[in-house]
Image 1: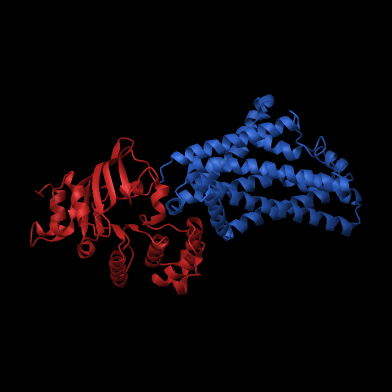
Image 2 (image 1 turned 180 degrees about the vertical axis):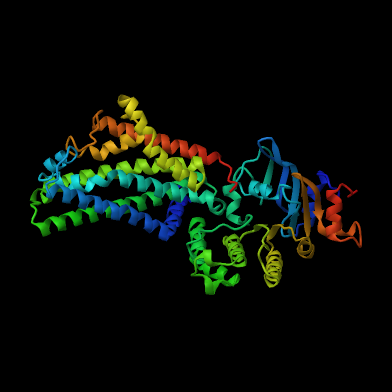
Length: 273
Length: 258
């Protein structure tokens, strides 16, 4: 038996649990509003609506960045849903008292956590892929029906931009899911894990950004969000003020911190629930 | 057999084991939660191939002891050997251990079969084992139903199936008769005896003293985290002929045991 064996077993075991309706509900909650945001943005731009926020979107619309600019409007929403999906699933093992079943069958805690997280990550990334593809198809079909010119979107530059956005979104969600893992391991309860996740996304980074703009650019959610933001035109963003390479390195440092902190905490925890 | 831990306990326990070996041996095992001592210097020996009853009042430390043996909580002091392997390396002995801890916990929206398959995949057990166990606990006809629709007794039977998944050499059961009807309790008793005939060890925590009296070969009595008695069940009963198991248990708790 190699070190990989327990990881593969934990991964396959977790995949079975992804059949739960609550997981598919998470995908639906991510997909439907995101596609609606994309449609709404498309409709606002094509109907000639004006406003300071819409101007950069309208400028990017006819270019090869037009499609990702429209479908990328739901990015923050996708981040929040992904974070909740991971924290709820992991924290529920404490709330439901199911950790002891799992740990009796696989006492090596780190491979167990790695396998579980890989499966959850795969599910979240599949949900995100489905969301982006569905939103893109919806916008393309609507554009086709309304006779809106989309040649730039389907050009090789347009496809490259879509793939660059997608791959950076994958990196962003990996970071978000690792943050969710740490929150679940530290809080050990579904309700408190969701509360802490939402509070963290909505409050502290925003407050710090208002009083300490320079420092807030290094905080995890902002850094993760800079990665896909770097693909958008300036003005649509969020473009990383520290530059893409620096943002990527900081994001990797945050991911490492989340993984190490989660592993250290989980390895030493008493499972009393 | 005296109530206090004693070096001869190990020899006595080994003498009582069909193969002369011990399934569980703890030495000064302790667990503190803050200032509270849940388990306090516990020294017990359980012979292999027996049904060992584990009794004590609520809060005596039974479930914490079970969690310690399963590697779910870390001891504050002491050591233990389970199936010949040290407590510090649960990965060496847990593949041969099945456990049901307190009320069995499941994923309520998944079916009984899928709940077992989750654990079968995790432990590397064949899928066919799941079907066999569902037959054994008579849940085959409800295997596709979500567990949230199961009665308490059905959940308990599914928990027993979960514990039997690895075909364990040591089965640790915490209140397995909870929620079972009289027929279910009789079936559970038969199952435990059948497992003993196969040479397996059953470490059985229960409040049903009359039930333990019928099946247990060995007895561990726990009070305030310490062992009041650790020895053959028959010797415990024969010390005071005519006194019921429950009366002896209560007398021990009140300090009238000697």
